Length: 357
Image 1 (spheres, rainbow, N blue to C red):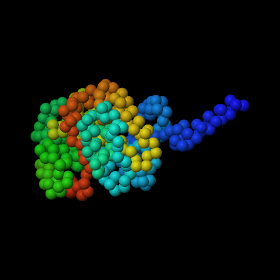
Image 2 (tube, rainbow, N blue to C red; image 1 turned 180 degrees about the vertical axis):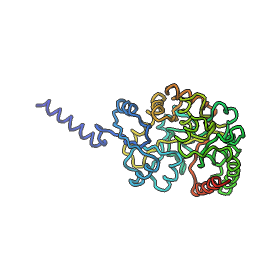
Image 3 (spheres, rainbow, N blue to C red; image 1 turned 90 degrees about the vertical axis):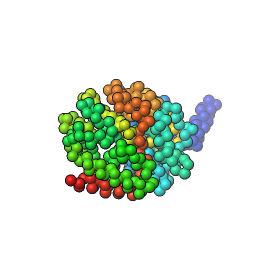
Image 4 (cartoon, rainbow, N blue to C red; image 1 turned 30 degrees about the vertical axis):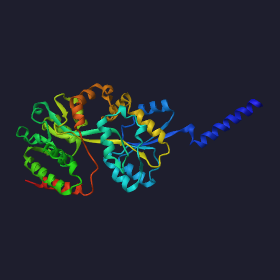
C-alpha cells in the first residue's frame, strides 16, 4: 500500500509539473516556413535529439504576414520571412520580438550574412532576424561568351547581340545601376538621387534592346532558351544556373564583377511565441553545417551556415564553388527593405523601356 501511495504521489507531482511548465510531455515547436526549408529527415533528427515535436506550416511572405497580423504575433513559435519584409511589417503591426543574439551560435554562420540580416532587420536599435537560406541573381553564361560577359552591362556587348535575355523587373534596374558604378541602395532614402539613377539605367536598357532575344517572364522559359542555345547570356537566379550546369557543364552561373544581388530568408520569433527556447534550439540545430547541407539538398538554395557546402551533394557543391569564392560572397549586394513609393517609380521606368523602339 505504501509503495502504491508513493507511485501515485510521484505521478501527481509529475502531472503538476507538466501543467505548470506548459505541457512538458508534449513540447512543440510551431514553425511557419517555406517549402524545402524543413526536410523530413531534419525534422526527425531534431525531434529525436531534443524530444520536441515540430509542427510545420508551409507558407510565403504574404501568408506569414497575414497569419501573424491576424493573431497579433501568436500561433507560431518561429517564422522565416525574407529580410526585407520585416522592418516595415514590424513597425506597422508589431508581430515579432527582437532576436537575442547571445542565444545564437554565430560562429557557425557566414559573418557577412549575419551583418546583412542584422542591419536590414534593425528597428529602434534591435535586430529582428537571423540569416537562414539565401540566394542571388547574377549571370548565367555559356562558356563561349564567359570572357565577354562578366557584369550586367556586358549583356549589351555587340558580341552577344540577339542572344541575351533578362526580365523587365527591379533586379535588372538594380544590377545595371551597380554595374554602371552607382549605388542604388544607398540612394533609397533620397528620391531625387534614386530617380537620377533610374534615368541613367533607363537610357542604358533602351540602348541595349537590340541585344535582347526576349525578356523572359518565367523560369522554365529562360531555362529552355539557354538549353537550346537561343540565348547564351542572361540575368537570372543562381539555382537555375546550377541546374543547367548539371545538365551541361558549358553553362554556369557567374557572380558579376559588381556583385550578385542577394536575398536572405531569415529566422524571426513571433511576438507571442509560446516556445521561444525551442525556436532558438531549432535555429542553432539546423545551422550546423551537416544539417544545413540537407536543407540545401532539399531546397536547391544554400544557407548561411559556414562550411555547409562541404556536405552538399557533389554536383551542386562544385557548381556553387565555381560561382562563389569568399570574395564573391563578401561582394553580394543584399537587398534592403524598399521604401514606399520606389516600386512605382521603377514601374514607370520599366514600362518606358518596354515601349521604346
